[in-house]
Image 1 (cartoon, rainbow, N blue to C red):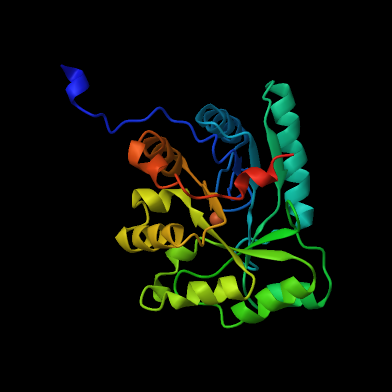
Image 2 (cartoon, helix red, strand yellow):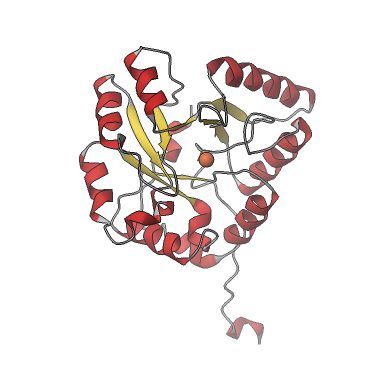
Length: 246
Ligand SMILES: [Fe+2]
């Protein structure tokens, strides 16, 4: 008689995403994970969920998270060594999540090396309080340098809620969009959920990322991954995450 009831549960399987390109799993660099043991545990859990490769993107925000290639790349090597010690077979890379501000503009103008992944992709973000005044200029300058900007979690910039044509403007300028997977659960509120679903429906989403920082995110991800309705959202969507497999 139980077969009369359609279950809303699914077996967690995020292998259709395969590559996570936005996370804060490198320990002790920002507001993400702090200890190597945590990193190992999270990576095991993400592997069980179906991820094959992880690209870690610590924040770079001067005065708050003073990261650079000099802090991030040696930490990546430590994590790789810990993987080997733990017999953990998972591809891991590092780039960064650059705040769009005057400092990023200086890095670009001064020709400093920027952390990218895949085909010259660079992940950028803005404050949740207000848009960066130089966002369009930064997109333009990055593209001029042959880099492909990806705007992190556009659905969380709810100051665009009443003017969603701004997202089309970013895409027209050549910026790709990456939504956070947990937005689809409503983790960041209904407004972000609505915008994320709208962007997906309009086929404007190139990447989906975990933006994994802590236990609440991991718990929510497992919950989302066991919902049948989540997988339905992607039935006619072609994400670029898998293109990052190598
Ligand atoms: Fe992030």
